[in-house]
Image (cartoon, rainbow, N blue to C red):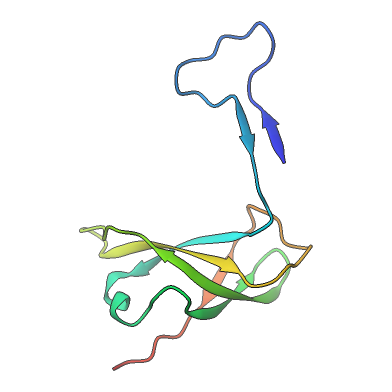
Length: 104
């Protein structure tokens, strides 16, 4: 997908995007984790996501965890990728992660 943001004869402010390109070959999920889970959750961890738009559950793999914990909410941003190719999924859909963390 590509989106044109400016037209001929229009002026663009510095920092304003002119073009947005979306690579949907590897769909990513962005979500927030409690920081206390960081000791038990590492990249490569497999879990599932239930996408509201399709009503289906899909396999997911944790790709990366943010480098900074929010000091107020005690949370950290995480990114996972859908394991596999599912043509019914498109960018912008929302869902609920199904993640269980074993206590130590």
